[in-house]
Image (cartoon, rainbow, N blue to C red; front, side, top):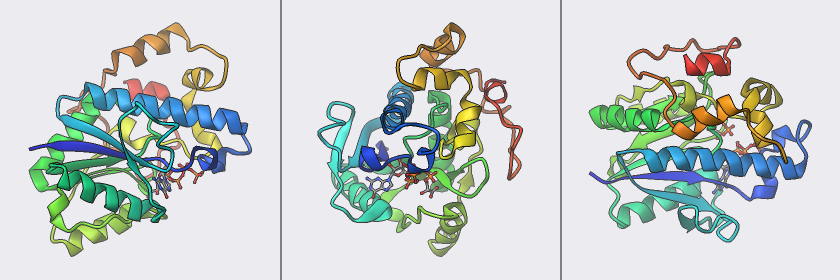
Length: 238
Ligand SMILES: Nc1nc2c(ncn2[C@@H]2O[C@H](COP(=O)(O)OP(=O)(O)OP(=O)(O)O)[C@@H](O)[C@H]2O)c(=O)[nH]1
Ligand SMILES: O=C(O)[C@H](O)COP(=O)(O)O
């Protein structure tokens, strides 16, 4: 078994456009980089991830962060599919495709989705509204095609059925918490202080982040309801 993680990142200046009303262009780019660094740290700490790749048109700006695969302009799904093919040719027998905007994800969750994915051949981690898909574990020879975009969680479930796969649905707080819109920033609480330019994290948050091991016991994590408006950082740390 050789599991590679794959993260798609689009042109940085175009990223997080939905946050344009809340953050300046410089803040948005800093946010993207900071969140990506957190995802990379979790993947690096994983015991099951063998390699980490980023498919992106920003090979120069992201140099040194991971194995960089050039985005040839095929769009989100096309770029991921191209990169998945390259990684399979390179020897990857398993892939964990995940987004770079999951600032609370940690090693325990990464290892958990891989382990669960291995049991059925496919695992889907929806966002906390169960509309989008934040991470997919798959085996590249399964024929599964990526359907990221609007309501992709439903689309990926349909795609799984087409391939004769019964996916494990993984509801874990860090995997479910992506940052797309201004209210998501409010939920970041103290962490946002670090993500915004020129500020420091509070020592409490900083310590927790450094450990990369939030006290989340995968056996006791809550099974989330379709919508969790009361979601909070504190909830994620329970
Ligand atoms: N390599 C690559 N990554 C992409 C592409 N489109 C989107 N992404 C990445 O996929 C993830 C989800 O994409 P989006 O929701 O379109 O972008 P976003 O930056 O998260 O947010 P918005 O700009 O507000 O839509 C982000 O991490 C993007 O950087 C693409 O064409 N190529
Ligand atoms: O399929 C999805 O969930 C989206 O393409 C992911 O992007 P978003 O969570 O940044 O909207």
